[in-house]
Image 1 (cartoon, rainbow, N blue to C red):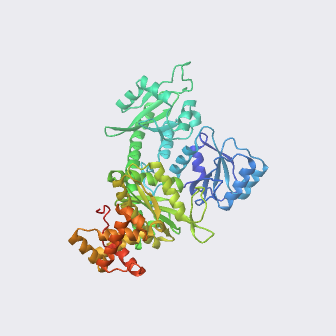
Image 2: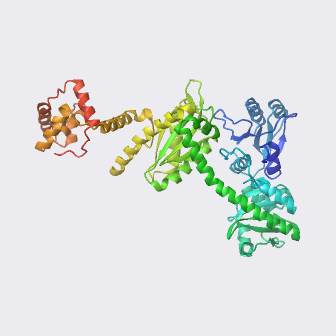
Image 3: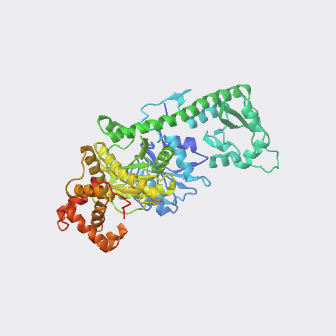
Length: 561
């Protein structure tokens, strides 16, 4: 069984190297952790239950004490600050009264690295995992547990690395290793100078050719790498003929035969876990797409899908992303998922058909609307407007090479409202895609993000065209008579009427649009009234003609002279 996520486990796995416990409340009932959040002093934090909060930029004792008390009201589990952490009586009292533990992040380690490690340990990315799975008696895909088990077997601190010498996981007891190992873990990557030396000495060539552990002596005393003090024992991790990575142990002497066999056995186990992680990424993507699709379609399964996505009992804004290039869809869908997850840990995004949908949780505002539960520094209670800002920021990052557009749907206040929210986003997206297709031919750009309020008239007009086409409607009345006359005599009276209506009766503007003299246009306008019988002073007849020209009679963008 996977250990329950807790402060105790975090300190066991990351302690000494990255984190230390500075101050803890006495008699704490539970140290369970429900998620990771980053403190934002500008926006009121929206925290998961029993959150571990990263206090980036918080230093002074008064700020620390104030933040601890605020987090205590939200039942946070702990607060992490950059070391050294100043603890005065006010901070100690705040820890005790709030029940929030205070931890320190070692200097040199990045907040991004810590957040990634913590989320890996807490498995926040496992969507819909209703039961634990084990490989070799260890939680499937939990490389930190594997590293600790290997370290116990060979009695040495261990790292698990990929083919590029990136650290995937590490065991405890890293403080027993040398300074080069600590530097490697802090950077989550073997420093380039060490990798270069290993390549020059042929270590990787020997490692990847052998199925037995390789013993590597440290750099000679007085060399350019004095931080490398302890020998290493390394073994390749393979799946068939493919090298997936390697296991590295900081040892003080060559491995005994028993420990060498244990390291080889561990390499086979690590290979299973790495393959499980690789397969799990594809499975997770498909599962998330199924859950997002089910939630958006509605029905009896929608409530369970929303629950497994972690969005139960939360209002949600729906985003719909489309691109002109089909080859770019999967890439931009993954980019959207990553962008949204960085904004809020419970965001969900997936490619459904040819559209990538994003679900962003919102919180009710004091004004009775809804605002996004994200710390983007924006003002205003409208969740849709904040979604526009998020979508615009995403498109600014990815560029417009593939001409992506995003439609913003209305806020869905429960699972039952998601289908309508999706339909709203789809309506907006259809308008944006049609406009983008038209502008692509003209070499111009228009809005790439919109809400229904921004394109409501265009959406209604497109749906009216669909209805007219479904009924087989043709022009009637004055428009039909003008169309028949144009077809018989080769004139363009329909376009003359269209230009006049579009210009709100301004003859100068309408004649310029038709590339004719104003007097010529006035003559044609008289012929329009004579042939069609339309009364251009009657607002109802003008509206009926304009509606037919928009919804039934296709516009000719290149009128004849």
